[in-house]
Length: 318
Image (cartoon, rainbow, N blue to C red; front, side, top):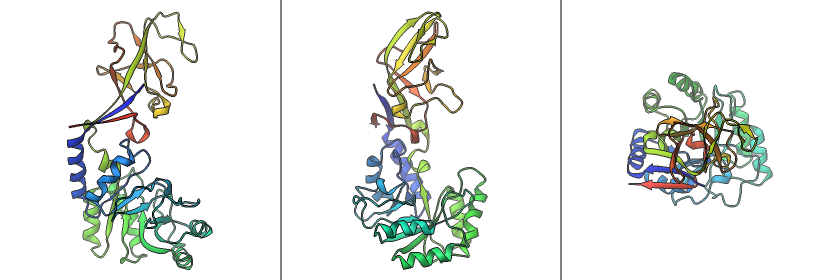
């Protein structure tokens, strides 16, 4: 039972270095499942390309290389764990975030999150002065501002989200920005030379060209079936004569049907239908008679976003 992610290591490292060169002031983002590559594999690379690294939550900050400053992107209402280095920079976006940190006796450096058109986290312009004052009263040192425009939309919309804040902020502090391409960053730096823009990158940095990577699962068993049979957890009737194929990947790996309900599995460039929804560590597939059937022990392709899966094996190939 294995979900395996295979990565061309040489091409992948070249890609990471190339992206880093395109983004001066890069802040790599390492959060969640490490973009399918595991956080523990990405953290050692940070010191080669940046002096800061961003994590999703306070619980992800550990094993930080010397000289690297960790920044937590998501505000916390819980006590920061003891495993988090004292140098960690936390994010605040409203007064309640400061109250929570004060309750747990935490003092240190913070970044103020600014509201964007996404309306995710972040203070409004009307509440900024009160937030700055309360941060000072709570012995929190504001070391920057951050803004997170939406993923979709025109790039100029993201630039506008950022620029509408600049006249309200102290340019002596850096501005951490997301979801802007290299061209937009150059535009911002040219139009606002007094500002230190630092770009947070995750997906573009670590994943890039998907041809460098292959997600696959192994075939554990197969059974010939007739159209009258009912099989599986839910004892559903099979779609016709063919074979039931059991694959070693399921919901425990983050393998589920695609958003449109189709199967995520492929063999010999043909999609293999699900007989029923994946379950924990196994998916049950149906292949009609006459179509290519993988043998037990073969590997078939899996189509899932790498940010949503947990591979059992990460295989680095030269």
